[in-house]
Each structure stands twice: as structure tokens, then as C-alpha cells.
Image (cartoon, rainbow, N blue to C red):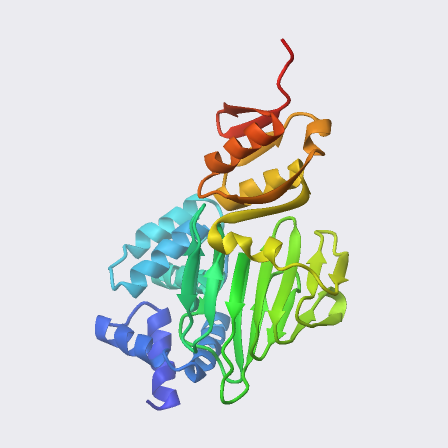
Amino acid sequence: MKESRIKLLLFDFFDGKTTSIQRKLIEEWLLDATNQEIYYQCLDEWESAHPQFSPDHETALSNFQSVLNGKNQDNSNVLQEVISTGQFQFSRWKSFAAAACITLVSCFIFKKQILYKAYEAAAGKTATYCLSEGTRVILNSNSTLLVPRFGFGDNTREVFLSGEAEFKVTHTANNDRFIVSMGKDYQIEVLGTEFVAFSRARGKRVFLKNGKVKLRLPEGKQLYMKPGNLFVSSPNGTFNLVEKVDARPYTAWKDQTFYFNNTRLSDVALQIQEQFDVKVRIIDTLLSNKRIAGIYKAEQADDLLQILSELMRIEITQKEDIIELSTPKLP
């Protein structure tokens, strides 16, 4: 399809004027990753010719999905809702342009949801996925991996991790880089290797099992890792690289197992929260500093809580949506 014709077709799509057949053509055309750049160039050009405003994000997403699904919209009602919020004034004859503008802005806001497919693992479960180029990913519970919906670009395979996952990266004939972005300027860059990546609120962590990786850190810093190395970063940005560590604490989760090596109870509570999506609170500081060692199988939170109760002689209380750990009162 000639670029001039696709440009006119995309402009009609942004204006909400395309038929279901035309929308299907656009969808198939976007399967080619090289066409996505043209799509956003046209989007930028269309945006510059239309007024902008601050939309209601939920309404914008609903409108955008309606256009994709080919549903008719009462654009005057959309306009009236915007006017009633006092955001700005449009005359009646511009109502259709306003609705199209909502569609455009929502396209930017929800760009990641549109362009990326989310692979997830539910609370207390792990999930295994094989990416299109052969890379195998095992997600830990409460974890999400975003993968390009329309395929990887040239020379680079980039995914976005929130949570924890093990990657077995496939080497490609073109030596395409594989990049795991973990937010806050943290990236793992590899060519073909096996590693475990952790990206949650309490920090970042990378354990390298095989091969070599390069870490890109905030402020332009770079760090190279060798097999057996462990990288740990705290929320404030400080980090540490340990040369040789035991792999078991960082891979036990794949077998729904917890590996504790003189681990504080406060850290155990954090792992329970991350693994099973339950809130755990320790009542006193003395108890939170108690330590535990061993390897324990736990497919649900109650399994591990029962072990803690018996081994550490602690009292467990369910209060609404919070589990409290405390020292039993003496009779």
C-alpha cells in the first residue's frame, strides 16, 4: 500500500470514519513492525492539526476501544460530558472532532497497553511462557512481563518486567540483543544466557546463572556480570555486586519453595506478601528480627504460616485483610 494512501486511511481512522474492513486492513498492516513508525508519524501530524485537552482517561479508553470495535458513538453526548466538566468549550459543529481527539489522546495514554501483550502469573502460582523467538520465561507469582504485540524490532528484543522471572534467552542468527527493562533506568542486556531478574518495590536484583550480561543503571552507569554473580539494588539507588553466591535462594520459587538462610522474619513477611498477595504485619521489633533457616515447600500462604507458627512459636491472627504475627502472651 502506497504511503500516501495509508496516510489518508490513517487520518480517516483517527477521525473515526473508517469501515470495519478498513480497520482490519490497518490491523494487518501494523503486524509489520516497520510500519509502526509510519503509524506514529501520521498520528503526530494528525494531532498537530487538532485541539488538545485533558480527557477523562477511563472515558477515553472506552471511546478508543469502541472505535476499534466499529461501534457507533453518540459524539454529541461525548462532547456534552466534556463541556459539563468545565474543561473547555466547543461549538456543536465540532463535536465529532472532539470525540476523535479523545480517541487520539487515549492512543498515547494507553500506548503500552496497545503495543504490548501482558504475560502474567497469579498470586501463589508460577507461569511459563515461550516468546516468539524462542526465549523461555518462567514468571514468579504476582509478576507481569510486557512483550511487543506486533513482534520485536530490528536488532533488539526488549521486554518489560514487573516482579520476578527466570529467562533462558535464545541466541539469534543476527545476534539480536535481548533487553529486560525493569523501570527507573535499570536494564539487563544479553545475547544468549540464563538469569533471574527481580523488580519490585523493595528494589532490583539480578542473579546470573550462565553466560554474560551488561547492566545499565541510573546516571549512565554500567556493570558487567559473570556466572554466579548477584546484583542487588535498594530503592534509594545504592547497589552491591557479590562475586559468587548460592543459586538456591534465588531459584527456589520455581518449585514453590522458600529457601531461608538465617533470614529475618521481617524479610520472610515481605516474601509472603510478594508471593501470595496478602498483607503481613509483625507486631513487635524483637519478633521481626528473629531468624529462620531451612527449605520449605508452600503452595499457599497458610502452608508457610503454619510452619512459622510451629517452628518459631509465634501467634498468627487474621484481622480483616491483614495477617498479624506476634509473640504469644504468657498465661
